[in-house]
Figure 1: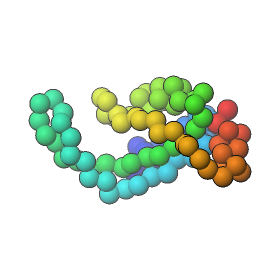
Figure 2: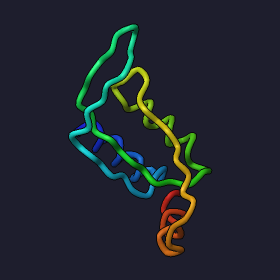
Figure 3: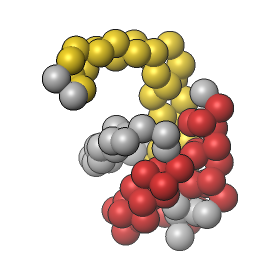
Length: 92
């Protein structure tokens, strides 16, 4: 959680993301280097604009302790006009 908070704070301070949410207690099972692994992780969701995605990805990779941190982009297909404007105004 501490690492997720550091990454999220940095992304928001640098205006790479408008907001970071944390979901603790996530259990992951995944293949890594020929083995099936299991780990407790923190899921972090960050809201940003399409124009900031690559910079945000670089920041996450720079700060994350994993060799290959999970970084996926999920498009926002709809939302309140006010909320989407807030994202655009704060991810500059």
